[in-house]
Length: 325
Image (cartoon, rainbow, N blue to C red):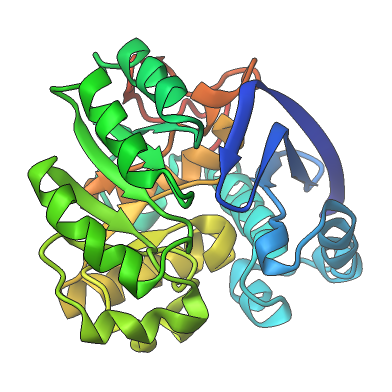
């Protein structure tokens, strides 16, 4: 197989801010595998939180050029690279290539049913309460809003969003920005505001605090949950896990992580980085089993890639084969 790995930059509609910083574009890496007759693609978004950069991810992918030329498969890939963005792009490209070689869809290869149309959460960037209320009002017709938090005005922001979108379901993402004291002071207020889920309230390295606090609202692991190797440490702390392919290192490991979560009785959220439909497509294979789908990356871009997933408001359709899988 011939390998191509390249950096792509996708401008956002507006600046996107979370507790750790802000950005105006999505800097992705796209992998293309060509066997001479068929081509498979995969995409990842290197994430600074995990020590990843675009150049570093491309360099890591390039280390496997010769092995890919010799026919490396997905199983060999799992041992060759750690979980993370580089393996994700390659793993998904190998899945896509395999579907093209067999003239089948990826769910046929897996022996599962096709993903259904699903409602995705729509993310509201962290901002002032007034700006977040305006954004919530603009998107009040969407069924599910995800609210980015992690600042000193969090409660005011949540109340502002609820005022702007009184009928929408709300979930929160603190991005590791709270202390135990913040959490305990906020939770009674959040119950009154009908908040359905809180994602990663504490830093991953301090999430043992979740063993000592009440959890009347389900808590979802994000930065604490990467792959099956990180799973056992989540038990007893979290009620749900956010499976992102850029953390698991691809669809292959993501499916294993889903099976572990189901076996242990944890709910599943399938999430994404801010990236194109090429990243969303393989993640949709987890949507049928997810309590919450958060695959709105393309909705935040100024323009998606060609043959992107069809979104109607927050309803997303399964990918066409021209895109992936």
